[in-house]
Image 1 (cartoon, helix red, strand yellow):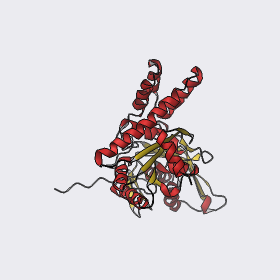
Image 2: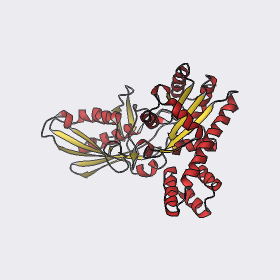
Image 3: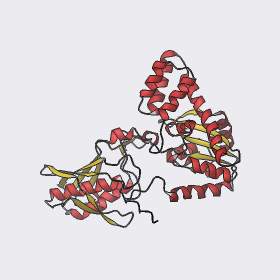
Image 4: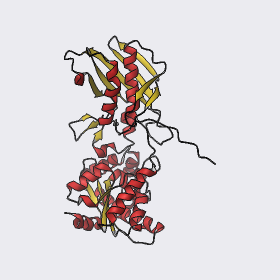
Length: 377
């Protein structure tokens, strides 16, 4: 029986661009007919995206709204409204490079490691300018403001803060097509890199994301031994054992790696969560009062839970944060070794390091300390 093809969806930059085109069309008294066409650039393809609403704010400004649709892929932005306002001004310099100014409004994150610039990255900027430029006369310039009304709320369900983005979501990505989180191609590329490095080294460092890679390098860990895992920890751990890697140092944001202490080895939030429950369980283990445990459970993020623990330690002259996180990293090591043994009869030495939103180390397991010293160049 033939499997049905997955329904294609698009990324946030594509919807932001469609909203902006619709707003500009409306200012120019062109009928959108319920949808606009745009060139995705990557891939080289023109697509039609539905417009939810469009309206003038005044004679020089209009608002366009689309609704995010990632297709059949899991994505927390599904059904999220994406607004774009376009304000037309005179292009006094007649400079094409200055014709289109792109800004982030409410719900677009700020890059704390980049002078609080709007988290609108190169592909989104290129996409907007490429598609809007043909609509403009040399005498016209526009200010495009992208707004995600639900961005701040949705950002709390991501690890954006670990990657230096606060107060909202990013217009990130290198393609207009929404790719599945479980893409075999992505996993295959990580596994291939792992196999190549396993031929050279008996100890590797698994980093969750670019932020982990960057911080590991800054700590003096040999960059040749770093492996980016994204959320694919489970299959990559088994691959490493299959390749007879003797030791693995797990290096990541505490809001991700904490899941391993609960036996969750695919770390994307769509597939499994339980982070606060795991934190609370280790709070119980370390003797936290019920009232504090309830406050922990009421936190929206593990980062908020960490700050609560530090606040309580400061007020009561205790060290619950240290004890709880020491318990967590030792449990991560133990659960990871057991996970590997479920699939292959080979013992891998596991250590772990977790860091916080401020990119500072929170805790290192005992094995993690030994491996960290071994890995420094």
